[in-house]
Image (cartoon, rainbow, N blue to C red; front, side, top):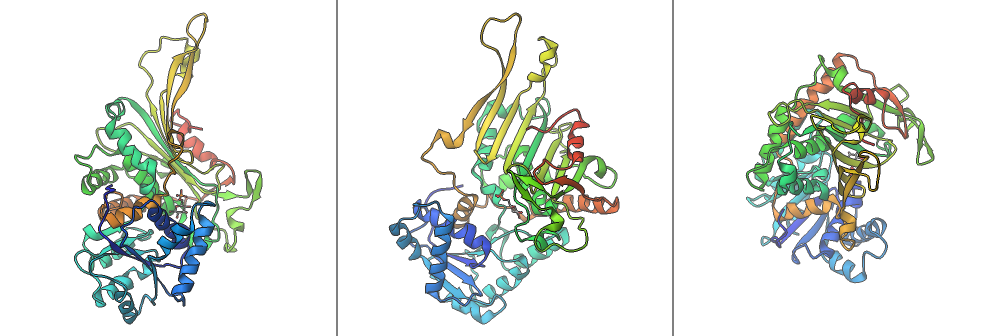
Length: 489
Ligand code: BG6
């Protein structure tokens, strides 16, 4: 998390023609350049199998920027400066010879940052060929996109392969949620405010809710997604990372390993969900036809590319998770995430305990409830619900629950909220690993998820249907209401 100008680098983007590169990475690199955050000497070298020459590559990047940037965001001067950094190499990832072509583009005075926006199946070939072309030295970095494996065993295979060529302190594993501005703000909120820091435990907090809902369905990804499901696609990485940011102990310093040490402690403290408790603590759902924002949408089984036989893959998960340590004993974390929900939103809600003795009119009991709502997207901001007396002359004391509102976009309307990838690409060039996932984090998280996924198999769990455009199956509501609580709406 260091904004000082970094050393110049050769940013080598493998998978330069892919969807991620075109939709997210080139626009993010452009924004960094426009904000003068890229070293003036840094180069961006696209690598792909596509039979493009330099002109065709530059044209494709320009087209994607025009498509994905806001109108008017790119002046011709911006484009001239950015396009001067671009270079392209056509490479078959399995051909050692092709990697020599990359070497010709590099400069020893620049650090090489390799960004693998490719399927993990080719990570091994890329590392091996970088090595045989003598492109790896003690400063070379590698950035890996998810998924890092399908389970603990396969993630170990990928990590072992990469580790043959790169030390852990040069491996940057992406979880793009960690690049979101408000996720980083959690660190400031928790560790710079004694008001919250001193109350961040089981004596003050009743429970925590984390919701990551999406309105999109599969968008042509059915054959990939059907083998993965929402548990692996979203919970194993994004939701558990958010849980760690909320639950971890204060790191002793703000450096990468201090933060990651604390996150690993939380992952290792997650109470197992296995066949003895899975039916009470976890709910899986799959959307059926419904409507979102007034538009009719098809069910999972009718999506483009879906198989004829009924799939048991979940598009929704809700969980009741416990963290077995002193700080969180007795405080459940309720997690839910799904596709085709009513709203795209990521929100963390910290619900505080009520006072031990209630002196007001008992009918007002439900109003008295402090909540801290941290909105990650959209409308990033923080709301603290507090109870006050209603204004005016009444008999007795009429209470009301009002919110202290901190809206990040309103507080500085001239600042745009950077996309998560902008922050992560910059940090990979700066060489700060704080916002990247360490190997032991990935493995602890897979170990916990594997046990849960296995439990679903063991008990023969069938996905529960929910209509597209709703908040998931009824079982998800029951999961929290059984405990006398309800989802924050
Ligand atoms: C990705 C998942 O990691 O995150 C997608 O693979 C999901 O399925 C996406 O749609 C959500 O990211 P965001 O930033 O739009 O919330």
